[in-house]
Length: 393
Image (cartoon, rainbow, N blue to C red; front, side, top):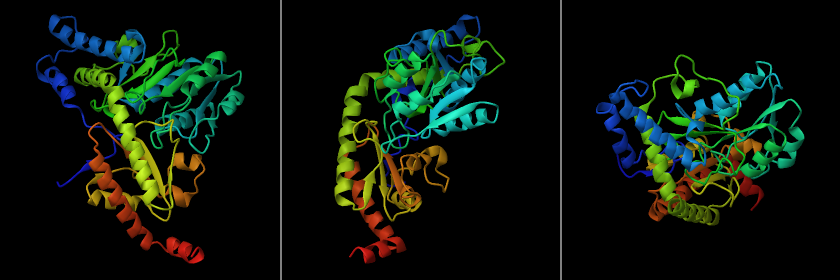
């Protein structure tokens, strides 16, 4: 394999060497089941407890409010389905937004098929939830508000503190999908009035197949997986000790490096945006320019088809995305881009680039030159671009 520039860290990240090193002993040396009573299993149990403490501290939670899952999608499903089941006697109305990850949207659609009513809030042109619409949407039978912390495609950070305050004032449980935000921005669940929070290890240089759901003490959420007493009887299944250890180490590293790492990412992010906007005409940046994840860039190139752009970038060794990794095989335009008001023909020309700790200025310069060359090639083949030039020359 030749030169590779990896700019798809929102899809997944490289597992940090320190994380791999921390995990290895729990595959073959301390491999005991963490739920056993003998001393050998106790080594695993201690490691799980340490990781739980590290993660809880990172969001200002208590150890017994962190529940390990197989990833962010499971955590989202658990939070929403279990809340619906637990509070159905109070009501069957749920509020979310039109730009959520499909782990939230599809779960809400499933609940609609089972007697629940869901309000999908509009967002503004930058992808920000409209707080006045949220207030108007709350009803006496509203039992849950689920709004993501930051959007996985366009990087916009939502007004989570305000949403949490509104939810708390109305006595409604508030869940946030923080899969993209955790490890990139500071999070304090008490200060933000968050009742439940989902996260996934592989988004912050941890291993795949591990995540957690934060459940505030007092929130009436029942078991999601039945069949054992693990995770304080709320999530059955033998603990993924190596994964949990790796997640804990990744969080430890992310917390220590956050300020310096995200500062560098933000600087390179803005450099990338500025160069592309100056040097590639008929281009727009999607998402809020300032209230956005430090590593996220999302463009739409007019008269260009995003899938072709991705393939040609790949031929130059550049890994990017046209949106969520979970929908990369879809020919439909991003639901997020449609929700912020883009027409289909422009939404089809999207490119998401997400930086990592290893990204360099040289990587960005190489990528910009590649984008310029490829976009120009694709436009020269576009009949829409030809028509545009004829009518605007």
